Amino acid sequence: MQVRHVCHILIIAVGLWALIPNASAQQKYAHLNSNEIKFITVDGKQSEVLVRSWQSKKQFGSLMIVGPSDTDADANGLASYLRTQINTRGWASISLTPAKGLYRPNYATKPEDIAKAGSEQITLSTNKSIPKYTSEQLLELRNFQQAALSEAINQLGSTVSLFPGASILVAIDDSAGMVTNLLYDKKIPAPDVFVVVNPYREFEYLIDPQSQRKSIAEQLVTMSLPILDIQSSDAHPISITEAPTRLNYNQVKPARYYRQYQMSLDFSNQSGWEEALNQIEGFSRTVIGR
Image 1 (tube, rainbow, N blue to C red):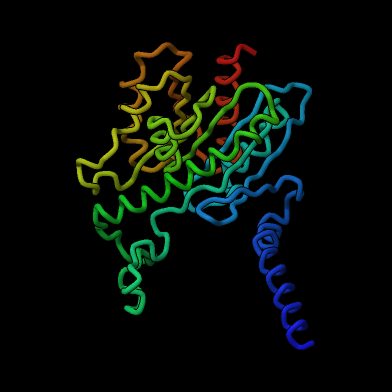
Image 2: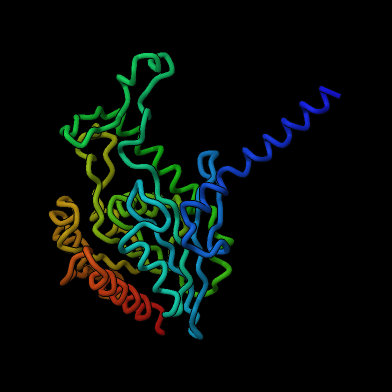
């Protein structure tokens, strides 16, 4: 009887453990309708995807959103605004949990170094300057980020198919740099419209030259899909500095295939988010002829 009782307790415990990711997601997204929260498995772990259907008689397709790294699927600011406001304009929204960012704890820690009080950890206090990471460390992180992002996007084909029509892919900040590379390498399906918002790659210059990727400008110019390049004045300095190069490389394309839009507002408030949404909607409807 005791053995059976212990087994029963273990079964209950395992069942409760399996529910922890769902419970955590429900707490994080308690402000949302539960039917908006979907799950995929990335790198062996559950990852949230937020899906909102059309809220309009118009049904143009879907808009997939990848926010800045280290945020969630409902990241404050532009990502959340696009996710909740595009639906009344005829697009379903699919918002991914972005990849982990540069300061992912322990990503460079070897098993034999675990007892060394975190001497190999890549964590950064707010009062310390950015250290010079090795090329190997940055390559490890880059591979981790891009593999996770590729795995996530490639699982969403069935979700996108629920909303027939044109597919828009919006990538923001450092995630825009990652998604651009995935499209360039043909590791994810090409959307009907690709939108980059303040794209940059912060530490590419620290990687061994032989392993460095082509610049975002060079990769975008090779793509034969319509690209909207949105640049705001409050973006990362690298994105601002590289904006003229992105324009110079890509202005050889017809306007339907590349447009750079310099924001008149920044993304510190809703007015800027609405301006970006209007540009995304206008460019996309021009492309699909609706």
